[in-house]
Image (tube, rainbow, N blue to C red; front, top):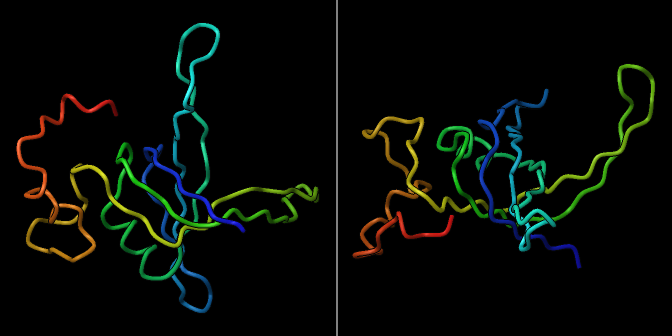
Length: 136
C-alpha cells in the first residue's frame, strides 16, 4: 500500500507548467512539522516536494500561495532522471490526488471569481473559534 497524508504549509507559490500535450502540472514544497522537538527543544520540519496534475494543478496554482496550510492526500513516488551534468539523480516526491485548503489565506483570484474548490465556503461552519488559539 502506498498512501501518504500530509499537513503542512507551502514554502513557495505553486509553479504551474503544461506538458507538450497540454496537461497541467504544478509543483510546490510542503513544510511538515515533525511531531517532536530536537535536543535544543526546537521543532524541526521536513520539506516535501508535491506534484499535482490536471485540474487540481490549476486549482492549486490559482488559489494557493506561500504560507498556506493544506492537507495533501496522495502517494510516494521515487523517480530518476539525468541532470544537465550527465549524472543520474533520484528524487522522492508525493503525487497528490487531493489537496484540501485548511486556512483562509488571501487567494490569488479575485473575490468575484468563486469556485467550489475554494476553502472560503467553510468559514460559516466554524462558529466562534478564535483562529489565534489554534496551534498552527
